[in-house]
Length: 357
Image (cartoon, rainbow, N blue to C red):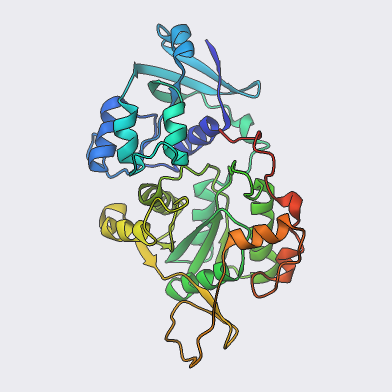
């Protein structure tokens, strides 16, 4: 039976098939879902922090409940076949509140989870159609690993972002390089909220920074084809695991990684990742939020850095996006001119009807 999927399903399929989510290579069963939620592990005991699931609406379930496999299509193009082992339901409010660490149904990740399909498929991907990759911005883990070997990079820090790079990001990049032999700048695509950057802009600006400004063999660029789950600390664990699968030995985690609004504490994600570091198998580089010291005109993250008269100016992506929305010039203390010249109001998602999910 043919079955049409959405873009977030496609992203999960790609990442499962190409071992980005290793040790998970299939959509989870009910017991696997509960094991991950309650114990951060798969049924075989291997560490895994965030369930990767495939769920469907009740109207779809009625059509496929007796099927053993589904031929999955995305925008009329064949993707793969999904072998169905079982179809199950789960207490979505109970597991969702644990997954997103909130009972607030207005939390964007929790809200999407509750509104999505009631039935979940325990399924394995077979007969993957490689032609689906032709127009997708997907970086294979093996490609990054080959470059690490080519340039003899023994330690490499992974940097996750869903923004165009600004001056605070550059400070974090520099921190990664100081700690490791190399750096992987690995932006995540799949934005769907209004006032966020479009995928092509996230890719264009970060790639420009790596290839035209940094121009160092030990600074690599790759694309993480996925979408934000707004899972806070749990999702931060998943991001760290993913970078390990791309060959990183270290992962940079700062303020409110994978968070949204004020649902999580400022450094909760880095604290959990540091706590689970040995299980993750990747070293966590944690740091305090960088800021501009207007006294010395330098990016710092320590208030005791030598300036007697401390004048702090916070740097964040929201402020920069607000400049774009108002068609105002972005100050150079926030972002390099070479990067801001690539941006305009059209760089942002302003039509909320165009959703990733």
